[in-house]
Image (tube, rainbow, N blue to C red):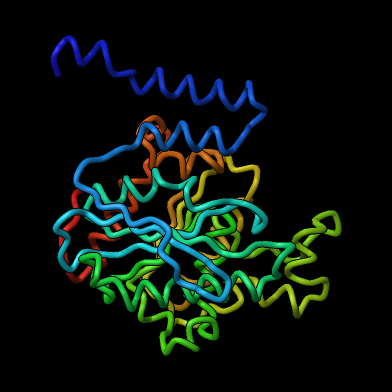
Length: 304
């Protein structure tokens, strides 16, 4: 890089400080924060297809990030978090850009949220998004036999339930074993009993133990799951690390292909923000995700 470009491009540290200032000054305004974060994550050589409708009935859309000239590339369907009540696919453009820059076709769908729907609603949306991706992967240079499900926080619960409880994918003649793997970032896997203070969670998952059990991926472990990578920050004060630890233990009792990485000092959002350029060094998220996909993909190579 020449001197002129060094002067004209803000440094990662400057960008990081600016984004943190936005959070403080605007009281954590999510839209502004994510817009600033995404502005730092442009990558050349990526074809972005935005707003593809995968559920005409509910007008649900998804975005596809595909490496140019991709051929039989691994595919990731990423479910964002937001307590099952908020979030937008546009906010996570940095995830799609980063993974696509490493040779992975990345699909980020929206899904309906509480209080408009309860658990059955957003789980049906998620299953439909995975089925759509399985059917259309080749159109973007992806291989549907290398389809990975990935999610952060509430999105981790959604993704984990898809690959443990076979009833969600069954209407599309798919099963958890058809997935190449699951990648969970600080997911909610084992959160019973739901406290009385969590009104939204009780509303979407139910008050009685039988209803709440339907939402717990740990309850459905059966040895028919795909390989699993569970990433968790030990400084996470939103989703207790016990979720990942409990889920990993249940999975390891049934089969061997399960990896749990606990990151000291890493918080809930830092785990996923580490997929962006300014916060890349805050956690080894990207490297661990790429190594897992590379180890379990049958088709095209990825760039690590």
